[in-house]
Amino acid sequence: MATGASVGRALSAVTAGKLTPRAIRSQRAFTLFVMATGILSLHLFRLAQLQLVQGQYNHALAENNRIRRLPMVADRGNILDRHGKILVANKLTRAIYLYPREQTRDQWQATAQQLGGILNITPQQIVQKLEKAGYRSTTPVRIMRNIKADVFTALAESGYIPGVEVQPESNRVYPHKKLGSHILGYIGEASEAQLRKNSDWPMGMLVGQMGLERLADDRLRGQWGNRLFEVDAAGKELRMLGIQRPTSGETLKSTLDLQIQKAAETGLANRRGAVVVIDVETGGIMAMASGPTFDPNMFTRRITQKEVDEVFNNPHKPFLNRALQGYPPASTFKIVSSVAGLQSGKYNPNSKIMTAAALNIGGTVFHEHGSGYGAIGFKTALEVSSNTFFYQLGRKVGSYEIHKWAHKLGIGETKTFLDGESQGLIPTPEIKKTISNEPWYTGDEVTMAIGQGMVTVTPMELAVVVAAIGNGGHRVKPHFLLDQASDPQFKPENIGLKPSTISTVRAGLELVVKSGTATSLNDGSIPLTAGKTGTAEVPGGADNAVYVGYGPAKNPKIAVAVIVERGGFGSTSAVPIAHQVYKAYFSQGKQKSQPKGIQAQKTNGGNVAQR
Image (tube, rainbow, N blue to C red; front, side, top):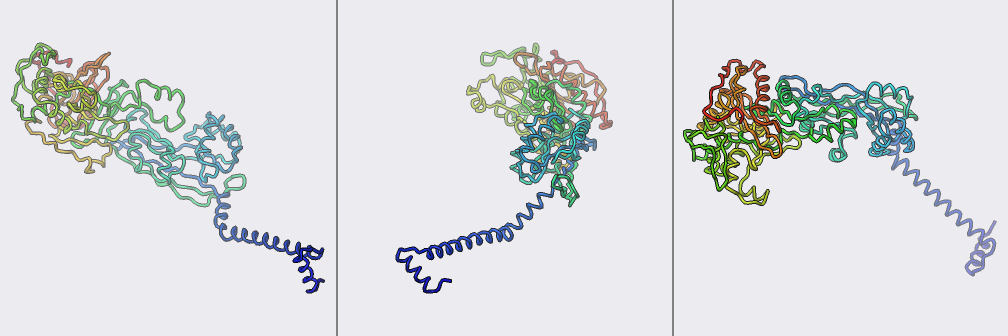
């Protein structure tokens, strides 16, 4: 054993620069001691960190590795018509889920190959879903929903696939197929943008993507639930640990009337065009048809290539809601011009204007339907749809007055908040300059007064305009849910029409049905109605057929607007559709006390049956 003296001699030797064998051994021992102590300290620190600092995290991680969380899809609320008939409901179906973290990424590829063959989808589509969720996702990924029985059988026969499960869940069903599809809309899985905006939504969340399904999604959607399962190392479920039951969405009663909607779509017969029916007093939308249409049931499952071609690549644009697109209103706009003239103070209900076969205005000749009607007033001008009457009215009243009353009546002001909605356009010199960078001519005021030129109006707006005439001067706010009628934002607005204006225009619209351009509505099968037809010139083809009116004439309840693209005369294409709508409404036993319409009377000139 080294004595104190010997150690001192060794240190002295080191100090002197001379290392003896004994000094070298002492130095090595000291170095090894320091290194061992350091390594041991690091291990002790890491152990403390794992046990004390990260213990809770690692415990949760271990639990998650043997606990599976399965989302439970909430039943969406049903959508009913105003009488309680089902328009949209749910049915029990099966969906295929895959747990991303129960397989390696290499296993994803193998599973995708196997599932792709069974589900008739590409493996890439499956892998993309898994990549989107991420390898560490704690929730399963829905690979396909609403699978058919043969797919379920094929999957069962393929044997157990780790991480793959078939689960029952609620799926949307539209029992009337194409009927009302532009109103009802459809659902689909939430997009990445929607998921980012709503962090509490699970991947695969089904939400409204169009129509009422979108507008009322927060009420229809409900709250998803969860089931917790303990699983073994192979991912097989051992027992259920707990359940958080989903909360169903709210059942909503709409303003729609199923029978009237059927009549509107049957009459339109999938032609390009639109039909709108609203409650004259409240603005509740009773029907809204747009043709051609589509079947929203295709969005409850995987869409086929044939459906893609028929719907998305269709030149007739089935997804376009034509009830909310602007069209030249033609002679139906004479209702607005009449209101502007009578409200302006430049005319009164007894005023007469001399009509003629043609008028030369600013060097341009504007023609009448026939040889003219002599001096006539507002009622007769509406009955025979005199152009020269309204040409002169337009010049005297001016574009600003017509623009003002068009907007008060609802043109350019009506919104339903449905997808792809447009609003009408009523030009003024400034508006024309902005749009086309062209000056305003006298001819612009002339054509504007008869609903031609730059004037466009949506079928929905036409219905709102005529409803204001029928209800005594209130602009209604169209809506789709019955309980919205009590919402202040949908309260009808008094637009300040003089009683004499209302009575004069209403009398003229009754004459249109009794002896004017819509006498086919006066066949005795329904109560007397009132309305106006129009034939809008369209370059390069047949004219658009237009009709707008309300019924019954003496106590209006519903307003109807119809447009048929390339339909020709309003009296021959649009009026028959309106007739079917009125018949559907009156056949429900309403307004039975109303007198039947009288037989057509002889007009005072012109071939009004075709205007």
